[in-house]
Image (cartoon, rainbow, N blue to C red; front, top):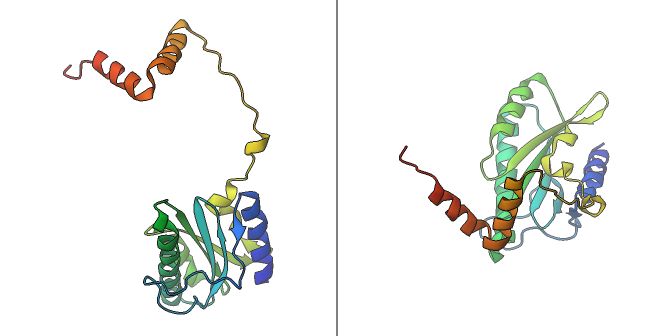
Length: 189
């Protein structure tokens, strides 16, 4: 059943411009931020130029166990992000926690862990009566790559004031235009 989740996320991830890291490729090797072996509950990892998504299995039935597994996975993903950011680029991180033993005791865990945005954004998915639920909520997977399909539209100013503003922007640039407008305001009123 885990393969169905991975496949469902992979379809959405590829549509959003993410690439799947091959399982044979080590994510973290000899890294000071993660000196241990690979994360034992890692299922898949996707990356793009702006973000990384780590899918991990949370195979437990208590809040405390789920919290410990999620914090360990968070540390692992953070180490991977630090490694990717060494060239000076900023990369967003998304941790997807796949709960395999969903029960009422884990409902507070879901609410709390998804509110915790320390280091990375977290999403919880779990297997329900109709298969895996909540994977549509994984934020970057909603960013379908449709830039090629977008057609540019020409903006036509509807007032003389709009036309003057656009002409000033073209002539001065955004920074100088902002300075000029700032001088027009009396902030001591």
